[in-house]
Image (cartoon, one colour):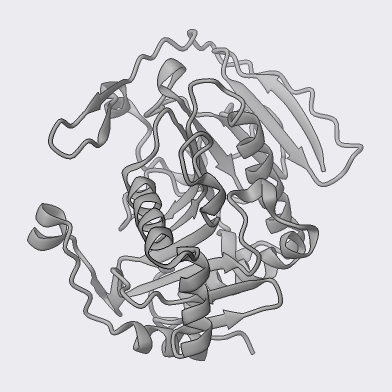
Length: 347
């Protein structure tokens, strides 16, 4: 992998990740952009203790442009975009409309491919491995920023999820705090350790492997399963068999196997509802340990992949119980979802 750093016209950083070591990235951003001057605010909820980002400038972000005006496509044929090059493998750059910036963290966009009409599931294993390398590199670099406590790599796909740009891409949030969901996991893990003397994440994976009925894929270095108390109709958790706190800790064997396993899971999501349906909307979220929180060493890197589609033509909306009280009601038994995802395996 070759990494090349440059700057966009408004001063934001852009990084090319290329599979070829002889790639040359010298294109200049020729757009007349003003320097970025954004100050999102972090406010703390006194009742829940949660942090909320206030980012009013995001009201003006680009929304569902036609393919010919996509800001994530390469700059070519006289049209200038966020990526100055005429083509690229993988690109990461600072978000023009970030939820977090400066002392309140950082937001980056990850473009998985220059092909506007592709999706992550369409990538080959080599390209998926390059994305993994970019996630890992950004995790390592952002962890060095003094204001950053946790790195969150994720992808939202589909208009049903709220995606504003159709180009295949994800994001990286560098939070200046420990996210509420991670804080809950850490508290549960600490309580489990006090009661049993064991690691909670290890016990969860062992239980799923022993029961087997919710396991979707059991590879040499990774295991994917529908969790016992799944919140979403189709939800998969993917863990490395050897527990590590974040992407940086993965061994070479696990790193080499991940692209094939991950691509297979995404393709099953596309197949489980049948070819008549549009591509399945989903959120793919990498959970990594915070850097300075107690319990970091006992945290387990894992991916949570889920869709808001509950059956062909119908979505799972977060209504009163879910949105008002955070009590989820799942219409699809996890064992049924796991069976259907196993049946959607590649031939």
